[in-house]
Length: 110
Image (cartoon, rainbow, N blue to C red; front, side, top):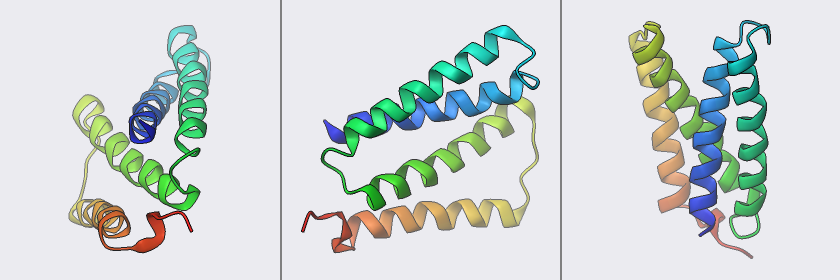
């Protein structure tokens, strides 16, 4: 269940960050409300995930996957360009999260 909370936190944070772009400095009510609510949901869900998942591991997954997803959403929806360096960097982020979770013992409580 902890990883479900983490997934909720990631999706809420990505949604909030994307809507922050659309809020135009908090001058547009709809995107501004989604931003505030999204970050609230994100931090609450992250706090629930942290009951089980070690903080370093949860934060690496949350920030890493969130960064990649926000970049991809902005690419698809807003047409923001990604160069080879950006793609390579996102690949390294995903690889780092995978290594940390699959090969490292840091995900274990100790």
